[in-house]
Length: 236
Image (cartoon, rainbow, N blue to C red; front, side, top):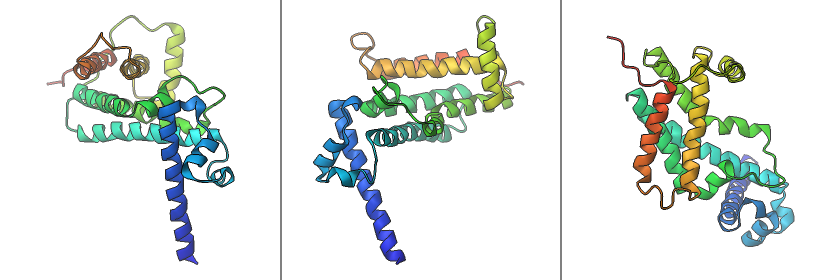
């Protein structure tokens, strides 16, 4: 009985993977708004009712693809963080940002699904949040490590406006209470700017403006590291 159950589970995994692969192909060809379970089933030689046993609705399939994409870019960032464990904090920051950028450039349609225009009629469920946070949490890890090592200074710029401080204080309490509130605010801004730069490249806004896109991105990521306060030298 266990052999039969194992075979069925393997078959389900294989069919699920095939469905998602065909859905990704359709994302590239048609865009997320036109993703159709019937079209996926047709291309796989399945009847629609059979596909519904794997994904009851288009939104369920979209959610699975979104989670996969967040996990893929998150895994790339985490691998870069692990590979740069002994590096300077700024170099660790650049390595993680570069890994996220490289994944996005290599997977533009999957990137568009998670960082592009919202899909009409689709609302992501709460269980996507933890997957979406993986890249941001690698950046938080770098800043926390720098703080423990005495390599984190105060972010440059004006004092925080009261509403911004209130938001950042709440986030700090939930996420990293040991970090100064201005650092949390700077982290959120830097995280948004990293993906803004990536989106400009992926969606063609740099065409005929920036040609050396990899070096340009590294330079921008370095500036964002300093914006967060990662330019402090170790105490002697």
